[in-house]
Image: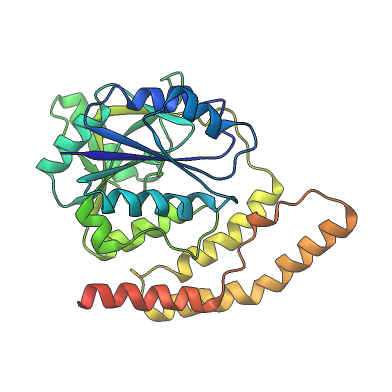
Length: 297
């Protein structure tokens, strides 16, 4: 079983040695790095310290999803069995990948398998589990009673650590071009579940996602509300009327976001324009149609 580890980097000098170094403790891995036009010599560092890495250097920041697609396409062409998506600010334990592959082989209905994701101190777990109280309750009971299961199904887990079998990628496709920055993983999970794949975490495997003390500001929160509409509009698991309603709301509110950006620009406020998705309606509709065609075929 060969596994391709795909890492998207952008100004990743703070973590890159730990991130890539941790992967090389795992056998049968090929590391593919897609650098999104870093300005802090990340690409040069990787070439110097990890010469066996395959690195693609983009001439612009393509975002998480589109950059990952470059690595996924390469891995599929090279005949991979598994793809492991790894954030630049994350790293694995020496046995993480092997455990996850064994768990997935025993549970082939799972298209996305994640380890337990902790912070850098190993004192705090990612909060995605806390959103799903029935799963958390079942996991807690199993742990207390000493018969923890191989894997627990969840509706969502962040793509900082994803093991994906090749067949899942071939059926579901790659990341959607609708999402420029953020929610790419949520959209992929929606499509995977639509095609009958499950998503889960394996309690026997652990890995780190070093989110640090990052806080979301006002601009990010404003953007998140718009992104939620776009995510719902693209949700192929929902009935068509649900998608149409959210497409309508998205485009009805879009002028207000554009006006907000214009005012910020005129007043000298710092606004990162890539936070604001201006997705053509055709892309959303085309994705819904294509995914429904996939399931029919």
